[in-house]
Length: 181
Length: 133
Image 1 (cartoon, rainbow over the protein chains, first blue to last red):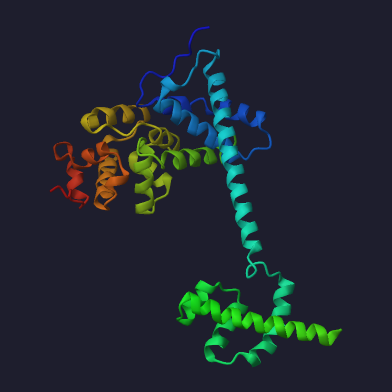
Image 2 (cartoon, rainbow over the protein chains, first blue to last red; image 1 turned 90 degrees about the vertical axis):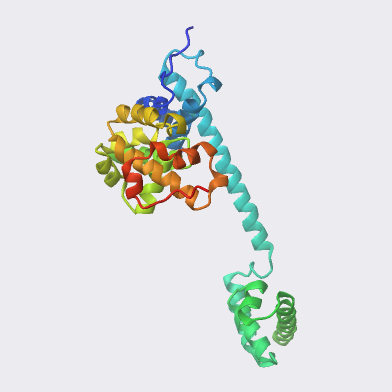
């Protein structure tokens, strides 16, 4: 089988290959009906750019038409794009899981409401302005670093203040539980 | 292909060529963004249709040592006016150098930006001076 002739001028090769977009994108879409349109377009465009940049890396001798060649190459690019998406999604899920495991970030809405009730009682035991400020920001869901920044403390000191307050909250919560029982 | 699908395909060309200085689309995208233009405004400025602008984006950035020749090939392929394309490419290359992005860009493009002999009159009009030492 003879090798397909790619556009001869490397300077306009990608522009010439682009003229096959209609047939190639349609065939790509029919092969991948559930894939997002933008991904199909990206696959086609990335492919013609790659071919035009380094035509010697592509073996066009196995296909009979330039469209077949572009569909095959675009399909491979599409699989890479989808793999990248999957990896990114996994990374994001892992990140979300890590955030969820953070005791501060893992508070559900219900917990937050319950905490706020406890916090209203705990406010009476926050002994200093510093502790009251830390408690107020903690209730709003700020991290230790953000609390430190806003209150003007070192992060260690903010963490210490927050630990003291959360310990009091736990003790208070336990007392309330005991009272309910 | 519907007109919306075609627009999305054009956007894919702008997006992908805009990430790599190998392609004219890279410099045109920077120009469009810095001037806050729509792509159709740029097409008008270059005297071509939106479809031809997409093809222009897909052409290779002219080599510094063959700037005029490479640019002519791209403009003949797409029907774009050479003078504004040359001005935009040189301006954006000079801007990149000016911003201190030299490390991020291949030396060739920077040479093109600083090649005074090939500069068009509009380079001077652009108000951007080469910072050659």
